[in-house]
Image 1 (cartoon, rainbow, N blue to C red):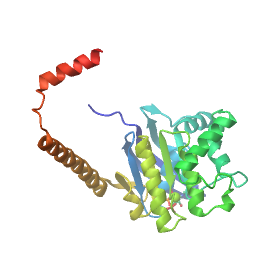
Image 2 (cartoon, rainbow, N blue to C red):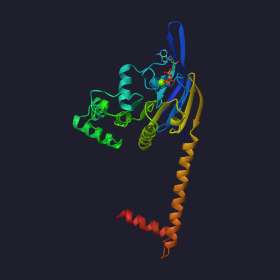
Image 3 (cartoon, rainbow, N blue to C red):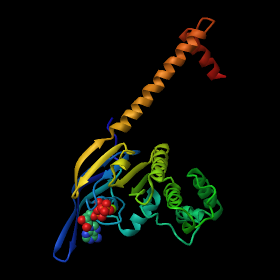
Length: 279
Ligand SMILES: Nc1ncnc2c1ncn2[C@@H]1O[C@H](COP(=O)(O)OP(=O)(O)OP(=O)(O)O)[C@@H](O)[C@H]1O
Ligand SMILES: [Mg+2]
């Protein structure tokens, strides 16, 4: 059975007008993304990546074309509906973290829960839990200026994931981080998305970062020029699956060898099970 597309972009175009000049930032983008997909939008500076993300999140309006979520056309949503939609469904991770400087780590992470009307005790408890998950259990009360870049981005990640949104958008999330922290932060986001079957859309100019995604969509001058499965990840997953299968086979063989009494025939085992089930 064919899966319902989760996010569908049809004929999306964005033209910026600056005086007499026209900049075609996006030119006829067609893209379908499934639920739980980890998708990277890869392209050089000025290729239109952030523009595409902004259209998908309703932060800017397209000149032409449509964005659909689960077959629902959101393109004509007004500001209020978009704000509600984002609040309910979307988390963001930014290159420059965009934390509230006057607030502590916990307060920053708890903020999206406050917008959802959750009471203070509950949202503080949940925010602390998520901060612990991202390895910041000992930085709860620190303000952003009292944290390193990597720590601030972990707060940013905790804030994006705290509401368990269906979609997380990340625009150059590791742009200001060193390579070790980049690896940690990327793994954190990808693992969290996989755990919760979240759709994770990552924007970057960096091939090294793109390899964390299941799928890499390359854009040049506002057009998709390539859309490919990330083979290295696919291979790793296949490898894990085949390793697991092999392990199960080996375990079964070892158990057979150590079996002293005759194995129970399948129908007898089934009869035992159904008796057990009835008790
Ligand atoms: N508000 C705007 N007004 C006019 N032109 C714009 C505007 N925003 C973006 N552009 C132009 O649209 C094109 C795509 O910009 P965009 O910010 O999407 O690129 P990007 O791929 O995100 O680049 P970077 O990697 O540098 O962030 C660029 O040529 C840019 O100059
Ligand atoms: Mg950009």
